[in-house]
Amino acid sequence: MGAPEPSKAVAVSVDLDAIACYYRIHALGEPPAGPARVAVLRRCLPRFAELFARHDVRATFFVVGADIEEDVEGRALLAELARAGHELANHTHTHRYDFARLPAAEMAAEIDRAHAAVGACGGAPPIGFRAPGYAINAEVLDLLRARGYRYDSSVFPSAAYYGAKALVMAAMRAARRPSGSYLDDPRVLLAPRAPYRPAPGAAYRRGGAGADLLEIPIAVTPIARLHVIGTSLILAPRWLRRHLVAAALRAPFFNLELHGIDLADAQADEIPPALIARQPDLRRPLAHKLAALEETLAAARAAGARFITLAEAGAA
Ligand SMILES: [Zn+2]
Image: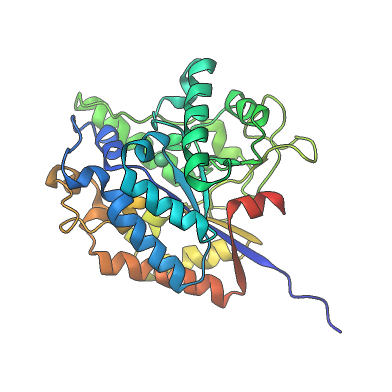
């Protein structure tokens, strides 16, 4: 009898940021009122559900509380996904990009209101959290610990992503059109790549006790720390996408982060041209984006990976 196969796991998560979030990032003013307003929940979410059903993936959806309070149809879709075994997790109530800079009471309210809305929708209280714009700190982690959360998945230790975001934000400031987004503390770039228990008072360092909250960082490649998320996979040429996915799959655990907008069909979903002009992934056809994600899931399966939710990763 040989030893059991070394187990590899992939957790796929989808941040359900509404189109209005991208209006804030790109400083586009008032978000659209038409179908684009609810496109992420009503149009993109069903495409993810179908993709995941085809590949036998149970995923984690990071839900913005106010969005499901407002959109009954979107909430019903999510409730159905929760019943099918997907995980619903907390992505704050209103997805403020300055969330981690708010006074503690306001941060707590953002967590608690979403906690109630997501719990009511999914039939169980959420146990996982992701901050808007990947910005986290020790205070947020303490609020999560006090509420019994098992994991946070906000740390994104990618120098390439951080640098690109800093450049875009500097250019927007220079053009007097400052972005609604914020850069995380640069110490995030030295954070571990593998899941870790953050030390008390330090979000980016190991050192927490055995049963403490787990931080599950978003995937980056070893050494170069290139980000392996939906947007990079969709925009990369095929050779680079294969390289990124293969590199991420060399680790025992691959935390693959996607966004609802990754499966938008810009024309059919009536995404306004002003946003399409600023968001290169919106200029790729839906078929291309589906194929890129499909290929990624197939590669994970071929590498012998099991698909698990982040809650399951947090419990392992
Ligand atoms: Zn988000």
